Image 1 (spheres, rainbow, N blue to C red):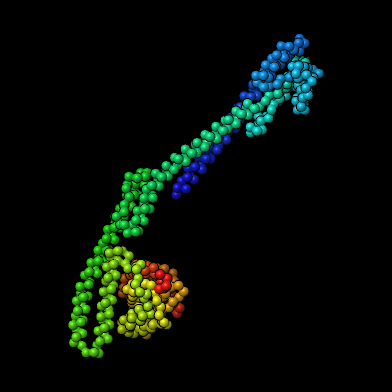
Image 2: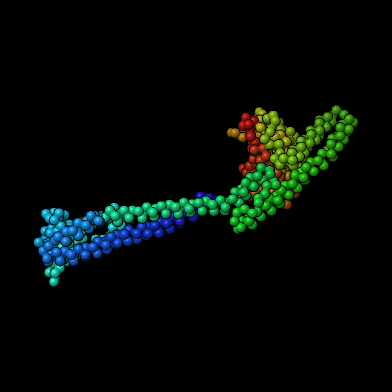
Amino acid sequence: MRTRLFVVFLVPLAAVLLLLGGAYGWVATRSVQQAFYTQQVGDIGTFVTSARQALLSGSAQVLDGELRRYQDLYGTRVIVIDRTGRPWSPPSAQGAVLDEATSTKVQLALSGRRGDLPEPALLPWQFAEQSLVEPIFDQGDVIGAVVMSASVDAPRTEIVRQWILLGIGSVFAIGLGLLVVLGLARWVLRPVHRVDEAMEAIERGEMEARIADDTGPPELHRMILLFNRMAGEIERVVSRQQEFAANASHELRNPLSALLLRLESLATGLDASWDGEVEATREEGRRMTRILDTLLAFARGGAGPAGSPGEPVDLVALASRRVAAWRDTAAAKRVTLVLQAQGAVLSATDETIAESALDAVIDNAVKFSPAHTEIDVRVRREGDVCELSVRDHGPGIPEDELAHATDRFWRSDRTRSAPGTGLGLAIVTDLLASVSARVLVEAADGGGLRVILQLPPAEAR
């Protein structure tokens, strides 16, 4: 954004300076040249008068002295030409050979015509030495001409000096503009940077992060005020969610403990034929305890147990346990659960989260599967991910609605009449995100829905 501000402010400034500087340079060059030509025209007019008197009197002594002093003072050579076209004064110029361009001007002057002033050059290095030739008239007859060869070093130096001053002024103006834009950018962007820093802090879990509302331009104060209000509301909502999760996990732990104690008491009065059912019930109780621990970890840290998995989890064994746990529920709806797996598939993930996610997906599959159909649960290693997939033969979801399947409280029109809240897949998505995993939902060939849980393999960590 700072770069864009520089471009927005400095490019127009540079364009204006270039336009004004070019105009000023052009005017300054023309002004110096015109002043130089005007002075030369005035001086040559004076010498024309003196030269007329000298030519008429036939004596060049006074004129020679004036020409020498003028040349010593200004470095400009002046030669008087008689009517024959030969240099007449000063004596040092007698016998001198004029260049072709000057000779042409002399011939034009001796014919009674004045030459045009030279066209001013735009660039200093195009400003060459100039020769002016003026005819000398006496009662309408041409009796000679005055040739003035003026050096242009002085006007050229003045033009270059003004251009240098113009360049220095332009650089100073651009530097000043750069400092102003830099200060303005810092002043404008300071609250934006603070908003960015506060958002990063909130993302890290520092929910108390706020921004001082006295920084930056007044136009951004409202944005800062609204951000602080939003951050405060988010902090309150997250705090209430954490409190609810902590209270729920704590309150559920007591009845669960009491239920497990009653189970142990009942188990003492049952014969050995019930040992399998009792052990399965104990395992479900222990699993509920692990779920409550995970829920409490989410409430305390906001990120669950991710990032510190223990031993690699065998997804085949995990899926086998969950399929066995759901088999009776599925049978009650006359639906068959089929597990497809070969060998062990190890994943570096959290076992409780993987179990909870698979339970939610199987629950949806059993809920929406028609009677006398199968639910295929498959475990496999696919490339650099481990996949737990559940495929049912229910009504499925249209292709254009698959992207909304993991949204909270979303229900497809095909299953809106079925019981449920639309939170199952949304919860699965959040759970897997906490362990660097993800969920894919796709339409299955032949109808139904396939939900794939993609988990990291054990060797990936």
